[in-house]
Length: 100
Image 1 (cartoon, one colour):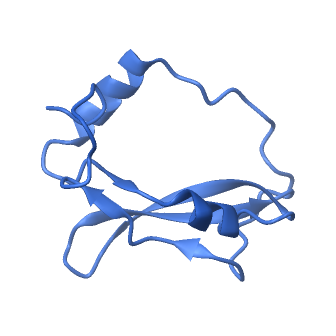
Image 2: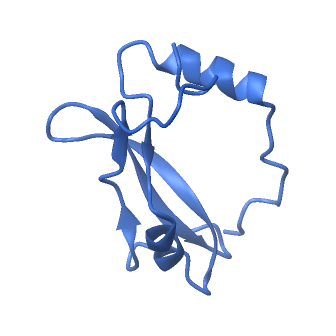
Image 3: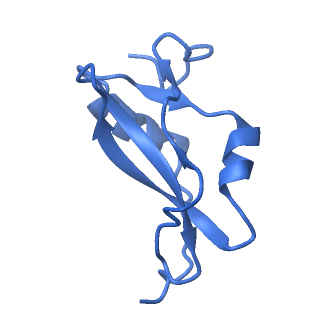
């Protein structure tokens, strides 16, 4: 299977704010991952990363990150990330993405 065709993933701040507002009702708003750990996950063989939604052992929604190879396959024998620092409480200053 080939990797997905390249595309522009860009959306406006207003679109992102609207989508995150709809999601924030009863769940964590987001999560923070350190750059050095993301760069460790993204190896020479990866072309990007994929996220999966999950539920942790406490019943809270989370996002799992995994690198993707040139064929569009998850690189399951490399770094896989979760345990982000959740928002709230690590949300940064209020902005349209994290503020109710």
